[in-house]
Length: 137
Image 1 (cartoon, rainbow, N blue to C red):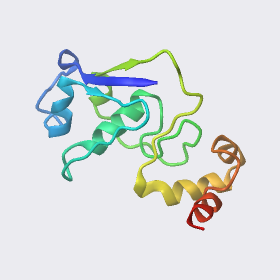
Image 2 (image 1 turned 30 degrees about the vertical axis):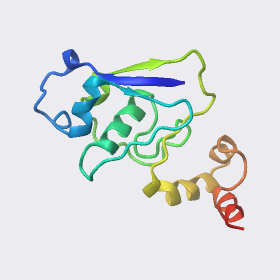
Image 3 (image 1 turned 90 degrees about the vertical axis):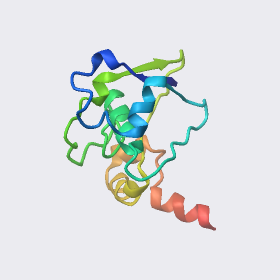
């Protein structure tokens, strides 16, 4: 389980380069503690929330666009130096699966999961669209 992350300024070659000037990224110098169940990142558009999540996904060896260790059907976005500057604190428990699902990617991810047997198995074995429809009933 991920407990916290912080920005290690000594690992930053160029502090004025993107993305280190973004407000949310600058705030990581003070650290970010994760709640054991859910943590919400909120802020203005352009403040760096998605940039942090993408860097965290990269640091955890997940596809930053799709956010999954199983599916890598989309091209990765250009690398930034942020993942190298992050220090993670982990607890003793390790999840058997992990993923980052961006809301704007859910439809595409659900379609791909439904088309690929290995991805479908890794996501519970039921088509995600079917589960979504069942939750609306």
